[in-house]
Image (tube, rainbow, N blue to C red):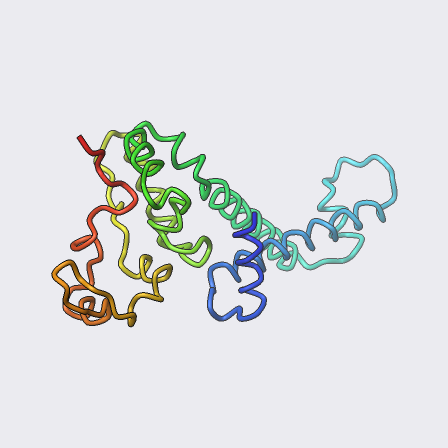
Length: 210
């Protein structure tokens, strides 16, 4: 919930940074407005029995053109679909879903809980900031669902370097001392090889020590 509120705050400050979240938010608002309007119209209609549908009586009373009625129905359908996708996305963004839903996640869950990144969410590492990484998140989750249902190997589980850097940006230009005593900058190393795991290994899912 805190992550969602933070995302909404960032979206309100600069909507252009996240078109996917903006479109979802607008769709939910439009859906809510349409539902409220339809309810108000329903209460305003005379209460008498009729074989005609409610939509037909509403259209006749308000003299709504057929094309406009079809447009409103289309907008309502699209808004409901987007709202359903948003709810599904939010519901599958939790650690509980990632660690308890799929049988294939049993071992990764154990290694994650013992790692130094146990306080970092699954979505934050593998996808990025929730909602801001919406397209990548939907793709990975659909692939995971397909793998769970068919037994096919899962793809896309690697953590992109940019996700690491979004949390560890403070070390890019900070001088550090290597094990051999030499001073180096992460920024210079990443210019040559942008892979974090090549040096640091599988952070978040380190294999258990024998």
